[in-house]
Length: 440
Ligand SMILES: NC(=O)c1ccc[n+]([C@@H]2O[C@H](COP(=O)([O-])OP(=O)(O)OC[C@H]3O[C@@H](n4cnc5c(N)ncnc54)[C@H](OP(=O)(O)O)[C@@H]3O)[C@@H](O)[C@H]2O)c1
Image (cartoon, rainbow, N blue to C red; front, side, top):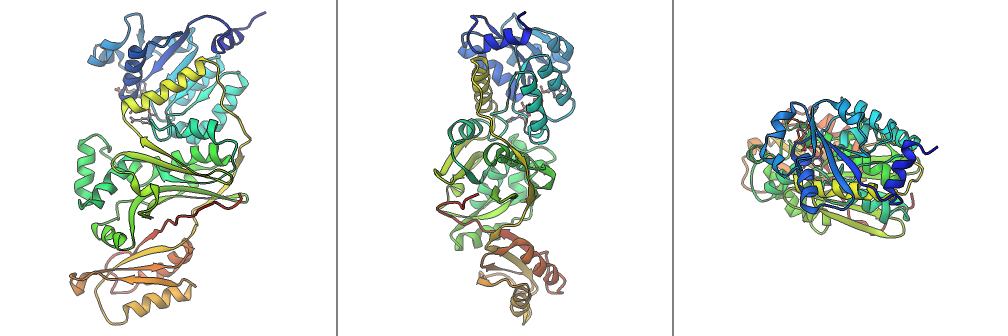
């Protein structure tokens, strides 16, 4: 007897000459762009048959719907999709609930799933992947990190033969837009307001500026590149909202700029992972990405550094990644699967640190800082003080030689108690350019 899933498999592997039927869940920014890309390109053998969205009439009568073929069934009842004979479900709604339950049912009923949903894949990707394997269907999520930049398929197909030891990069376009505009002289509040007006940042910008969006993406990249399953909530994040214009002036003096960097590195059974604003050397490719661009550097033991860059978000770039996944699944291509292990995570890195103090200048402050750092075993590398600031509110910077972030934080905790400290000192890791990663 030929089962339903075998029939679908034959279709997907091109053995049967039949049309692959596709349902779209979510007709928002990316969903409507996917429909437009499919309508414009008319890929042979692919047929968009259903579109699901809440309050769907609003979507069906929207200008974006004009590009959708008249044969498509529009529905706001998920059961219409789940009970249909579609082969592939494209999920472009976002979030974990209620999407996870719907996708579980879709996979269990023999439908492959293509999604761009980073939160779902970061938190539930491992178990959804197992479910897909159990039902001999696919779960692919090439657009979940860096939107239109093919970093996920690039790692899965092009770099799986290496031992990737380290990942670093920019995976949140909103933060990159804010920080690269601050680098050009704008202040944080103005740029954030502009980002919100342009639709780059949400009314509540916390998921972006506090690092939660980027850490979900870092966990997805760690799974596929480092073969390490991390608990996203255990990954240390640091907000970019405490960065000020003065930090870019000091960064420039140090031949650096500041970016929200997501980095992960394997050391034995431990993964060092952190999402934070960091000083980035101007010579690093990470410093070269401006605006909403994304950039990921994957460092392999044998192949060295490979850099992915491009538009990390936006309807059409992301739709290209989604449609590329769709075509790959429809044609039966299967990504390489390698064992993934749960790993403990630490935000610690051995790195030089940038410390910015704002003080009411009094004699003895520098010796108090150097004393507190010496007490924890951290060595000062340089002290920078730009002229022109009032003595009663003086910003100045200390950089340290490489040491652990927790070591620096211990010293800062005691320094923060000094009366002359007007603000909580800012502590940023300084990224270093290494030629070749250590053996994982
Ligand atoms: N936008 C990007 O540049 C980008 C880049 C990479 C990845 N992604 C990912 O792609 C996915 C979609 O993002 P997007 O920007 O297209 O979002 P969006 O514009 O907000 O679209 C989401 C769509 O889903 C619908 N929807 C939301 N909750 C629903 C529910 N409970 N039931 C039925 N329909 C529901 C929304 O309807 P309403 O109109 O009623 O809200 C909307 O049409 C997300 O996972 C996102 O993280 C987006």
